[in-house]
Image (cartoon, rainbow over all chains, first blue to last red; front, side, top):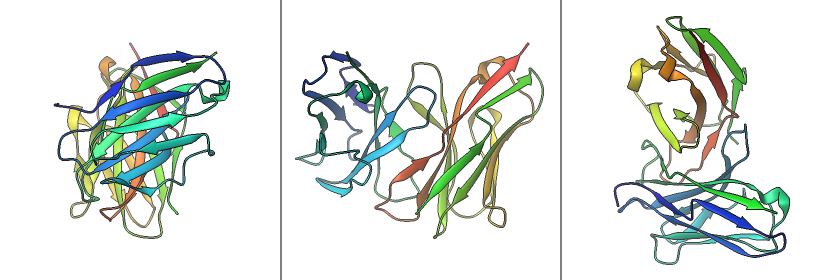
Amino acid sequence: GAGVSQTPSNKVTEKGKYVELRCDPISGHTALYWYRQSLGQGPEFLIYFQGTGAADDSGLPNDRFFAVRPEGSVSTLKIQRTERGDSAMYLCASRRTGGSTEAFFGQGTRLTVV
Amino acid sequence: AQSVTQLGSHVSVSEGALVLLRCNYSSSVPPYLFWYVQYPNQGLQLLLKYTTGATLVKGINGFEAEFKKSETSFHLTKPSAHMSDAAEYFCAVSQISSASKIIFGSGTRLSIRP
């Protein structure tokens, strides 16, 4: 596609449930990022993939959060046993290899845990 | 470790006035620097970036920023504010590396008074 696509755009789930958020990056972009953004805050880094492997997962808040990118394209962010504090906008971005390039962001998935 | 500090969570200027949004960074290696803009309920869009070369960088919508290594700053300016500039602005830093996460500041909300 022309841009980074995130689905669903909105997700409401009950506390304790499991959710999956999907990111479809720009074709050919080898780097993929996940961020979490709370209201009035900047994007908080969660995890970064270079190809299929997680190059840096230091931002994942705890072991309830996990992300995969099995074929080096689409990525899924998985959250187990959701808590109300997980409610936020989850942003995905992709980038061509090379630090000088900018990251292109999707529209985000707004997760609400009730 | 890298970090970004944006001074002023909210800046208000009159239409036609100078816009100045401040950003200071911390990086142990030469950085790449970015400014992104976020309109309500939208993803992040790149305004401009500094990688190497000229320290004064021009971006979209009349914005520019100057990289000052001695001051570890990358302030964003626009000579004359327009109502459509009202948005949230984020400064970000990345390492000069193909495998590098991007760290964002907490953002500055820009309001434009008629």
